[in-house]
Image 1 (cartoon, rainbow, N blue to C red):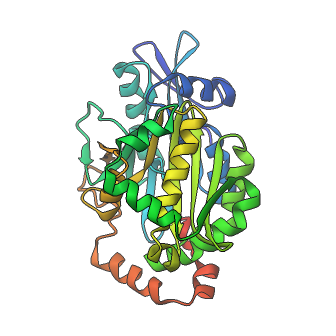
Image 2 (image 1 turned 90 degrees about the horizontal axis):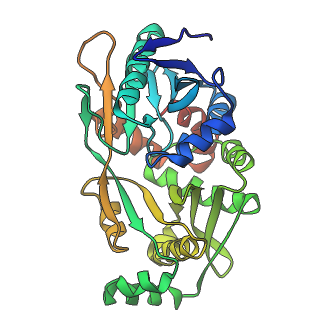
Length: 353
């Protein structure tokens, strides 16, 4: 689908890759503090090929130079409606630009495209506040940990109670390995159990394989085992000195053994030793048990800002998992046999933004 460009204040908004290459896009994202692994251009084809959602990746250019980007994905669903989002399926997105004026142009263009495409609403999931009159939801946070080249410095900063808890789990014979596609079967097997128990449909195995294929140097799987049996897993992204905790899961045995104490420490230690500066431990709901666990690692809560714009001007009703209808669906999903959730889950997961 072709889209017209917008000309305002000497800034041209064009659809990528009309203005340049994917490599230029990624280099720009890496140069900006607001840039993240989720902003990489490779996600566009992944969402289009594997999840069948159209990507609309906007570039801002001034004098031919790239000055801002805004990745957008249009998800269409009879259940959740038609949403133009930056970004669905991952922790956050939003505009990345050299200044506020360019950010404003990108947001304005996104609003116009939401109207042209007939979207029910535009949703911008941002890791920092925008100066805008769009309605913002503040129910999500990112737990962020500053890293150190010497992981022992982080270890010594933990409370003695937390260090004791980690040591106790190691004594139960837990061990962690990390790698790539060779660990995908173990990762997926644990995730199928874990997410079914949470009441959440899981993407197809092929989706995770495609991510590993697209970003072989920027992704890593961690598997925690006891006596050779996988009991806790995680899937991380790495980009521009930052680690993104993307997906994780734990079996009931992993919960009982508190496997995440060992899993998280091994991932943090690995990130330190590989020279990364910051670790986003993943998106959490403010006040949740997940937030409390991540605070034990001295991670600090950073507010996420989810902005909404409805072209019709009517009140926005975004997807809300706390709605009684969705809570009923979650409760039913938890009781389904694993063979059912394996078969139906990927079709549902691709339309839950």
